[in-house]
Image (tube, rainbow, N blue to C red):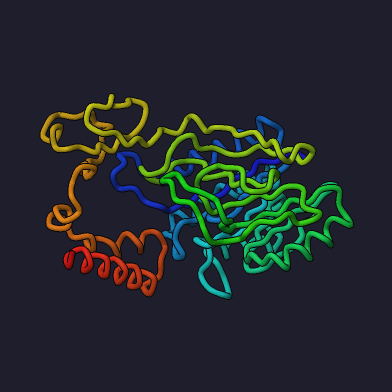
Length: 331
């Protein structure tokens, strides 16, 4: 069985620096995902979490997702699983409106999974949809499903030991993956970089588009064949304008939006209109000089809030940074 593996759409994440409204880019992203699915005759689209960015999304973001789900529900089955950005509390998520419509049988081909782990029969196989990751329960569900179905795909939204992101961070904590008998393919979401995980049939598909200037190209989706679970095809969504980070002396790309990291030699000059952000090059600045020039706490809580962290988590982050600042000042 062939399907598209995608995740981390983060609809509603805002980028005021971009001249085009980011929500329009995200709508185009969704259209591209389904264009690929239909072109390659996929039997389903699997969304492994974080379809929306905020716990309390803006109405236009929620409405756009609903409109797109309804649009493609007429054409191809979709399975949408709650992710950590979708999670609100123990009673509902930010995709709860979709779950209500699903429970009322308003969708023909779309399945919405929130707050519960379940087996979803599909053709001659089954998906294990697991918004609440639990490795013991995963083994139980895999054992049950593999007895009844030809193939079993586990849809998970979690971090695994050894996974890395576009900025070079590598996870030292998380699920220490071991082979679970009966699972044909592990379709993971949560990390925005596409990569094979410890197991040869386990993949993070990555986000289908860059959500900020720190994320690197290429971005896209995985096209999976359950008969070849260790060899999914990566399909780049090429038509989305890229986000570039360049430094002084680098050629300025013309096919996307640019953040310029400069030592101020270019500031004040007329730059191309696609250079939408500038930042100071701190590569050669001593830490004490940096500390004198900038307040590391400036804008921190606002940034964490935009990333979906709670007030308590924002305060904890600020306290950690404050301790680091105090140690630097003492040195």
